[in-house]
Length: 67
Image: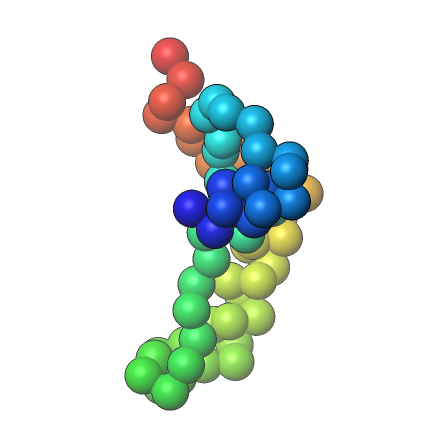
């Protein structure tokens, strides 16, 4: 929704299907005081390495929407 509203305000809105993922920050993990104990620095570092691998194409995530 945020991207759609921002595009509309900027006069760049186009209709259609938009896909959001790690590369365009459509999904990510959240780190705050509530999960700091389980998301240690080591866990966040590993998650960021995996995230970079996915964005860079080194790790392929199955796309269950494709048949």
